[in-house]
Image (cartoon, rainbow over all chains, first blue to last red; front, side, top):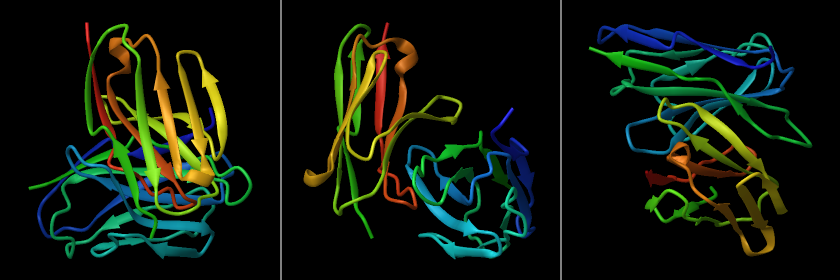
Length: 113
Length: 105
């Protein structure tokens, strides 16, 4: 089936550790996005990439890093510099031009203890 | 950047009622989407509607791009309609804060 897969669904880490969240899509989409959602809040853009080997910061990029070595994959690393990393993380993808309708993965709930 | 305002922030209705959710945005946009976030956090695509009107069953949406707003209509509400509704204009998919809808049985 075509879609976006995020893994794992739940993730627990100790404070001070870096952690990488996976996002893979087989929709042949050019653009991919990472969002953070805190309880009762909307989605905030962390990073986005419109083409392989290129990405831009969103509104809250501090403490996060990404890579886009393959069209299908856009992993997000939550570094120890992120002061409040516990949140729900969502990945999305879309075509870059014409119809830019975006589709989302099921999300990863990260808890840092 | 573009500012997005959704109203009302919260809405409580009895099953069977109709509702209208509004999304205002501060700048012209080339695309706009409506999503429903279910209780498990999954974002479900409802409409991709840069302009005009679309209908899908009990739901319909209208975007008036020249006046910078979009409306989502839900008719004959069901308890499964509960959740948060987000609009997302712009190519980087900037989100509004959402409307939290509670449908009471």
